[in-house]
Image 1 (tube, rainbow, N blue to C red):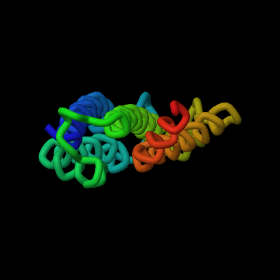
Image 2 (tube, rainbow, N blue to C red):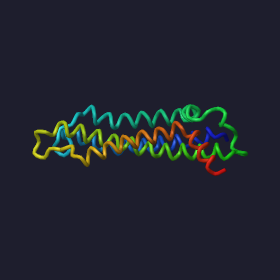
Image 3 (spheres, rainbow, N blue to C red):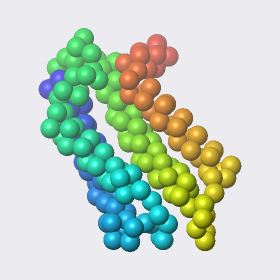
Image 4 (tube, rainbow, N blue to C red):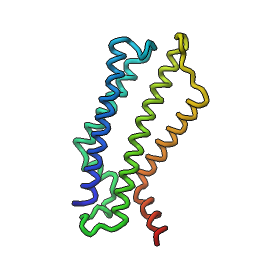
Length: 169
């Protein structure tokens, strides 16, 4: 098996995580459909539906095309058979796994904060309005930073592996 095949397996695992997240978000969608809001607060049905549909579409695409995604992420020059795998290729695959997991968590947090922000826009006139205080805004900023760093880790995994191995020599 090549490095891209192992990464394709990781892509399918990521697809399963995305599918599970879509199922988790579907409970909120059911609540919005049945009551028109979340805990008595109005929220856009389209917005909540997008928090279910987007991870579901991502899961389906990643499940159907894992090798294509793996080939996009891995360069052809490091996609060799694994038997005599060099440290750089192995480390690149591990970094891609860590980056993918971090990106997954950052996307989940982003959806949470986007939902919070959407609800705060519509809660001004409710009995218990949601206020974007300093703590909430700093958490949103930290999530944005986490999303950026995770994306950099995924897209620059080969460079990071080279720099890490340079420290070892």
